[in-house]
Structure formats: C-alpha cells, structure tokens
Length: 225
Length: 110
Image (cartoon, rainbow over all chains, first blue to last red; front, top):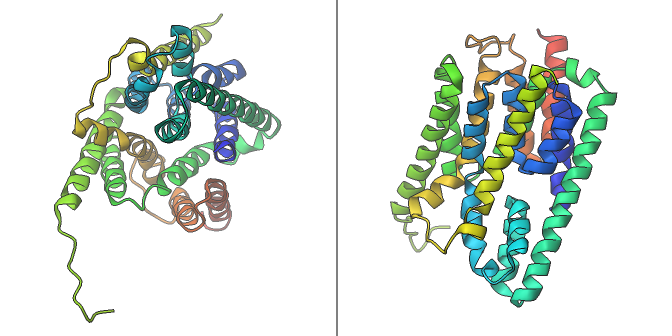
C-alpha cells in the first residue's frame, strides 16, 4: 500500500504546482489535510477559482466516509488515552482503516493493536509527504508538463482512479449518472452541478446495489457447461 | 500577504477543520453508533461519483460546449486511460497511456 500510494503522491504534487498552487499550500494540503481524493478535488477547484464555501462543502462530502471509519474503530480505541485518540484520528485514511480494521478484528491485544495502528498511520503519513515533495520538485523542474495539457493530466488521473473500480456494477452506474448530470448541469453557478451530480451518482449506486441483490441468481441447469 | 494568499490559507484551514472534524467525530467525541445501512452504502460511492462529475465536463466539453468530434483530443486520451487502467490495473500506466494518445492525437489529428 505504501508503494500504491506513491504515484498518487507524485501526481498530486506535480498537478498542484502545475495548476498554480504555491508550494506551501501543496505541502500544507498533504501535511494537514492528508486525504488523497479531497486533495485532488481541491486542486481542481482552487485552480478554477471556485468560491471557498463550495470547496469546504465538497471536502466535507468527499471525506464524510471517514466518519464511518471513525465510528467503526471506536471500540478498539475507547480505552486509549485522549492524546492517542486525537492523534490516531488525525491520521485516519482509507488505507489505514483497511489495514488496521482487519488487523484489530483478527488479532492483537488492545495494547499491541494501538501500536500497530500508530505505526501504520505514521508509515502512511511519511510516505505521502515524501512522494508529495517528489511531485512538487518534478512539477517545478519540468514546467513543460503544464504546457503539455495539465487539464488532461487531471482527467487522465481521475479516470484511471475511477476505472479501477468500474468492475463493480453499482460503481459503473454511479459514475455514468454522475458524469451525465455534471455535463448537463455544467452551466450552474457555484459548482451546484457538481453537488447535484454527486448526489445523483451516489443515489444511483445505492439503487443499483439494492436492485442487484434482489435479482435471484440464475439457476444453472444440470447438463449445461 | 496578498488577498490570494489569505484566501488560500483560509481554504486550507477550512479543509483541515472539516476533515479533522470528521475523523475526530466518533473516535474522540462519539459513542458507538450503528450507521443506517443506506448511509453506509451511499458513502462508498461518493469518491467515484465526485471524480467522474469533475472530469466529464472537462473531457466532453473542454471549451464549454459539448464537443464529441475528432477535434477533441480529450476523448481518445480519456478512453485510452480507462482502457489501460482496466487492462493493466496500474494507475501510472493508465495515465501515461492516456497522455501518449492525447499527445499524439493533438500532434497528428487536431
């Protein structure tokens, strides 16, 4: 997972610098927000001069799933001292949640578990900072990346991220509907189209998931291959 | 500090507050609660929906108006990126593949 995060960190740094974000803001996003998807979204919104409240609201929507992680991990953290919980919460990401939840559910006493949790968090955090810095340096030293079509770099990155999830049918439909609505509503002020598209896409994903659970699996006939 | 700097600092500060607040919610302030099932399902689709919503207008209407023609190099580039991603399962390969097709297209076709 450390290796998996590397390209995203590099691309984030490069895109941010190319989009005209100052170095301090790029490093600040990685160091203080530390949430990949919302950092990418922020670069795109800041680059296009979006109003502050819209950026904050979008961040809220994109990162809301972390509340779910926070609630799921609470039973393992309840007995820990407050400063542990404040720190572990700061570093809570998709990757850390996936690794830690699995580990805590299957093994480890509480004490070992907390150390494992902290260790994974720190490794993930330092890794993300290092690759962001590499991206920033790359973005600064190869300004031609910007003239090559930075908007396209954003499109290619996001479509690659989404494409990896498309094998799940609800995600496919969620993406199609969100893209369609965003396209139709692109003229709306304050990026309202983005919000509408997100809601429509998410609703579609849930509906398709519920619907496909109801369809009985086809019964295979005996002699067929 | 210029206005832009202040605005960017505010952007960052707001994002930190929102994100850290969400992460703190239950771990520090919360009690064990069960999320309603629909919400748990819904949250899983948010990143894919938001990312697609961001790029669809960029890829299909780069100048503001719908452009599904040979002159729009974003289309073949995006299709290539998705195809390589599905084929190799490698993000970096997908981005490079998309870029190569996009660059060639702009050079040769547009």
